[in-house]
Image (cartoon, rainbow, N blue to C red; front, top):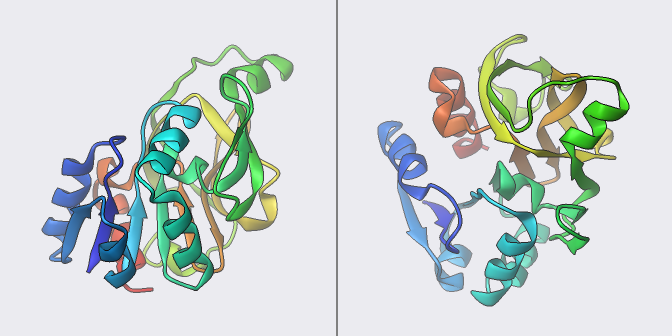
Length: 206
């Protein structure tokens, strides 16, 4: 059973529908006991980092999720959910994250401007993947150059050691990360067609 964390942030229906399509048992829950009983956990998220962390703490799920991940339960953060896995974010102030993967979430717009690029932010649309660690189990069935779908204005830095795949958008954007049993995708696998479905299946088969 895959438990999808419901803390008032994220499009849970499309993610659950994708897992249903793959024939993977799943449940949407805000119950820490259900998370503890699940085989795997997915932490989705859209919106602002600080608000999302506040909601995660308010529901009482932040510490249980962190503890379960540290004990080895597979955890997949998606989009903002991936960003929450890091130490901190600089989005509208400084906010502490779950601290499961070393790194900081910073402004993509600021990074592009420093490099002299005028690319649109948010980074919305399809982009190709460069597999930094093609043997990583999350990338099982994924090939160099496969396209995935992004929607984000902030991105993680200082996580090169744990980056599984990245995409070029003026700067290298960490598209997928992994440390221990903790995984994350900055892109939306549930919106990334057959490539995204293969990634979700790979997570289910960890």
